[in-house]
Image (tube, rainbow, N blue to C red; front, side, top):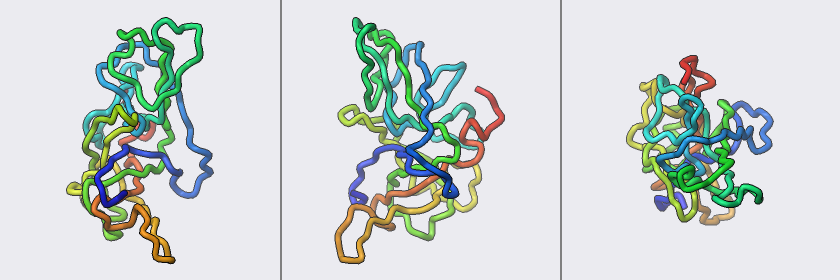
Length: 208
């Protein structure tokens, strides 16, 4: 509920401008080098020298390498090279040294994607169009989801370098008086955001 702090990372929901959306463009990126940190669904993913990993601090318009958001992983466990791949919500740390093989990080990499994310505080309609930073990087191994949130205290109409633009707020109110889980102005408002121009690697000419 948006009245309870329950972050779930960045969840792709649509494309900006009413473009056709069929669940998003998913690119599978091979991981052959050991990962020092887990990668969770809803994490921002970056590439450096061809190696994918989770973004661990809020990116800016001058940060290179952010290519999208993790929407799951697939791999094979040690000793199961001839078996079926496992599709999972997250990849534990040190997967390669644990014997995992054929590891792929599944990334929603469309630079025009819109994402739903929970804020760390209350956000109102007056904040639509503002920029904000992201916070609470990490994940929940029980559910496999990222814990990234929009940093409510960072919302700004002037800082052009921040990670995301607030495009809209989730509104699940009912005209029939229902008490639905997300409304603008809730204590931990669910927001709809887009990565700002320059934050996404495809809209940033600096290579990684």
